[in-house]
Amino acid sequence: MSFYKDGKKVLSELDSYYNQSINKEKPVIKQLTISELHEKLGLATHLKKGDLSDERIDSFIKEYLDNTTRLHHPGYFAHQVGVPHPTGALGSLIDGFTNNAMAIYEMGPAAAAIEFFMVNYLLEKIGWEPMPTDIKKRLTFFHGSGVLTHGGSLANMTALLTARNCLDSSIREKGNPSDLVILAPETSHYSIAKAAGIIGIGENNVIRLKTDSCGRVMVSKLDNAFQKAANKEKRIVALVANACSTGTGLYDPIDEIADFCSEKRIWFHIDGAHGGGALFSNKYKPYLNGIQKADSMIIDAHKMLRTPSICAAFLVKNAAALEHTFEHKASYLFHEKKQPGFDFIGQAIECTKTGLGLKFYMTLAAIGEKKIERYIDTAYDLTQQAFEHISAQPDFEVPCNPESNILCFRFDATDDVQIMLRDHLIEEGSFYISCTELNAKRYLRIVIMNPESKLNDIKDLVTSIRQVFAKHFSK
Image (cartoon, rainbow, N blue to C red; front, side, top):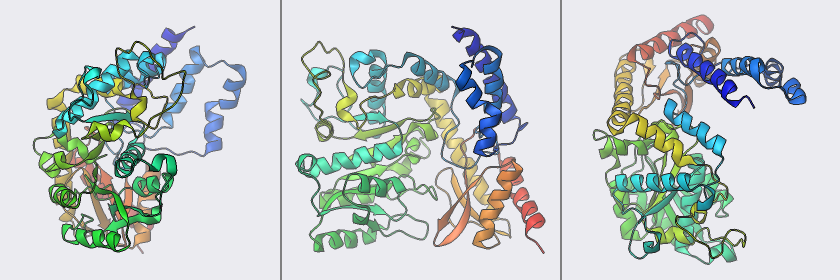
């Protein structure tokens, strides 16, 4: 076995990849066809011969890395996927090699203990009571709970299942009745409607909350949505708020929504997949005022907390609400045994779970709280600077003042041109951006995730957009 030798080759190539990326020596994005990549990577040959080692793994990794999307490139502005910290990536390597399926404590004591620690760490950040490390004391007093899941979509689904079970614990065995609805903003992430469809509530039973021109929930219109459900004799499983929205990066008024939910006795869930990272920033935490009043929340560590994909936290204020949502029967797993730790399998949809807490912990432990706060503040601050710069350009329109590290803007052209501008930028390779819709108009969109990105990169992007337009669209 040449694990150590091959591992050194892989680390050497990754180090070169990192330096090429931050120095802009290679394009931020490169997209060959599937068939071209099959051929360049030699997939069929290596699979047949079983020879992926020594010099062959070196050439394979070089080719693979040359055809990745370079998140470390300062021109990476497209999506809400964090630039992972190298120490967190080592956590991914360790977890992959040890392969401890830690949902059952005996299958990964260290991994389960770290996940337990990280869940409690986040509970305390929110202002909720952490889980007792003495498992015998669980549920003997009011405390929170949670689990790390493979992504925000799964975390949101876990939240809605927990809320549904809390509303009516008989549904799991009897099935969904036809009187269930979810209240969610028009701008909520698609995973909310998707989860409603998967768990049997139905996408059409997501009542859309009215939002303002920038996509924030209008508290003054909440009672209308509530009455709409009441008039149809519907039971509300949960009300979902954005912290922040995916499209524009704006926060819903959490404190006011929390008070409304408390008055109406509605489960209040916060989708903080992206903007929940503001918990780590004294400057921007006020966007989350009232968060401790919620019943549940999710945070994606692989977004603003620089953890390698994929790692999301589902957190709940009352552990008892989660305790019976995912009860299982399996005699080979659940029986009388010595139990020095805690089985996360009862808190999650997954039965086999990787050690997500390891890479999460190793990332934050390597960066430290002060530096992760500085990272978040810098990204949010730079987005405000980008807003000010782009707003001052006569041929650009910016619809909303940003509240996070997401900014939407529009070049003075039609909707189709916005998309084609993006396509040409991607093809050219210096910048990778996304686009979205707001008020039935198409906007270009940037997400500032890379600590290497500076205001000059934003200015260069503006210049490049003008150059692309002049080359391909001006008459």
